[in-house]
Length: 270
Image 1 (spheres, one colour):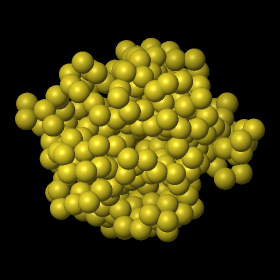
Image 2 (tube, one colour):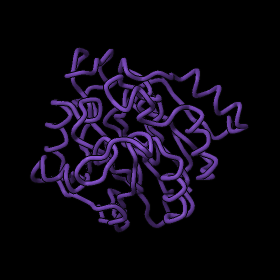
Image 3 (cartoon, helix red, strand yellow):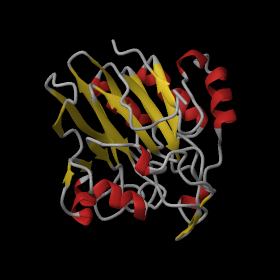
């Protein structure tokens, strides 16, 4: 199938494999975000309902893995961790990098690094941006993070679109901060799903609800939004139908780009 995510590189495309696991082909390079390749089953206090639409072995060579956080199995499971540690570049937050060990590189909020472009046209910039994994008044860890340290990312470069990956973020204020610091975003990969866990923050959303995702899209003024992290796990409370409805209610249907898990969302290069 031409639209199925596989080893063949795309000019510029995004493919969500299920849960948060997202493949981004840009500038001749391939990024994989939050790899989760374990089969279905109970994962500590979470339940995985479906495995990835495309197994890791079918992705071919990967240039960089971005891990928003390592403490929750719905964002980095055992197979995903092995996949991430085998990548030539692994970028994550500082605390996560300490736990994962080499080759993980920890990026503090707003810190940037560079990844060689697969098309030979220089480098791509990867910048760490904030994320808040729960309500603003939620319980904070020793480092001041709600729930745990979570890192969002912005990928950019000369002649390629700017891509924002939210990570597990529930805050519109954080999205507004990213928009204010980064400027124009061409594509936003938003982790939606309204994740709720009874033992965390009284069951309040730990990630964007569908309505908040539409609000985030409006704040970012992004011409393209690709939702992720809304399926394959039992703790997601809003699925694709609710996402579509929320964007329609907000008058933003045209910016919402969705495909079945494991299929490409192809985007203009310019």
